[in-house]
Each structure stands twice: as C-alpha cells, then as structure tokens.
Length: 278
Image (cartoon, rainbow, N blue to C red):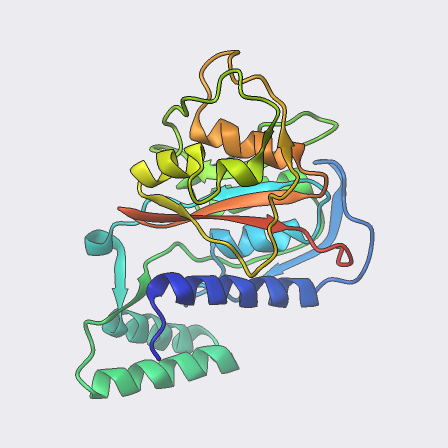
C-alpha cells in the first residue's frame, strides 16, 4: 500500500522524534532561554536529503526544554517547491562528492534510482527545503534558536510567553497561514480545547475553512481536559493566538506544529516525553 504524502510526513516526523530522543540522556529539562544545552548535533535530516532542516532543529530542541517550542512551516507550493525523484537523485549524488552517504541516504538513493529506472523521474517525493549542519557545545537555548533561524532565513522565532514561562514559536518571517481572526468564542469560557477541535467544533469548522485540518497522533487525546480560560472578548484573537493559549493552558508541555502544502495544511499537537531530557 502506498502512503499519501501526508501519511509519509507523519511517519517521518515520528521517526525524527524517536531519533532525536535517542540522542539524549534522561536529565532534567531546561526551563529558561538562557539555560545551556551541553551538545547539539544536527548533521543529518529526517524529512529531506542534504542535511538537517528547520523541522529537525525544532524536534531536537523540544527534547531539551520544559516549555513549548511550536512550529509553523512556510506554505509550500506544489508547483514551485516540489522535489521530484530526479531532483532527489541529483541532490544525493552531489552529497556523495563531499562526504560518504549515511545508510539511510544510501537506501534512499537506491530506491529513487529504482523509481527512475521505472520511468517515475517526475514523481514528487517531497519538497525542496533549506538544509544545514549545526554542531555546537555548551550553547544556550536562545543562541540555538538564533542560529537555526540564521541558517534558514525564511523563519524567525518569537517568545509569546514570558521570561519565566517561555512559549516559543518558530514561524515564517513573512506570510503566515495563522494570521486570520478566530470568531464566535467570546463569552464561552472556560472552554475545553478538545471540544473546540472536535468533529463539529467551532474551531474545527473555521480551520477547515482555511484549509487546515487537525491530525490526531494515535488514540491519545492530547487536548482532553485542557481548559482555555483566557478571555476571548479582550480583543482580536488570531488562529496563532488560540493555539498558543491552548499550549499555555496545558498541564504538561504541549507544542503545536502546522505543516503541509498550499491548500492542504495539517495541524498537530505534540506532548513532550516525560523521561527524556537534554
């Protein structure tokens, strides 16, 4: 059975998180932006070929800290940004010139070469993304975030929380898919986040109207019992504001990610592991 791109992306993210967690020992998580990470090693990517991406960097960062680090990916255009089998082969062959391919990269190259031999050179296998290598020792969380957005300049990071309780979002520097206003929530609090995103939830309907669907990771309802108490009558509330309020209200470290392509975005919530630290 062939996986859709959405299913393949989710499987890849799970693998990415597993690999990132496996690099870390069980130590207390960092609580502040100026706390230091003992070692960072981003030299392989799990969502594309050619190195680490902003997704890899955020996934790894989440294993270090005790506060949410959320991610909004840019709005990839299938026509402009698509990576075909031919593109992936060319990128992997260029990599071979600079360093030996990893086992995973070698397997990818072989599988793409098989597809090319079957006449599938133009098949889309992903999207062209900025890749980089980052290896650092004794670096603060703040400087780590500064470095990753300097390596992929399409993004910036913002602290929507406080110094004592950071809530970080790595987001596009320019156009956002979450800048629209959420309506119909005034005087309806406290609200349970799970109800907002339920099958017939008010927020579900509004997100779908903006081509954003929620992807439930497994059977565990991460939003169950999360009470959103912030006053929704105190001014304009954007979709990003709402997601941040949900993360802030969660009893455990809950991050969100917005991924996908133009016209088909998907929203995920991720709960930090209770046992893995930096």
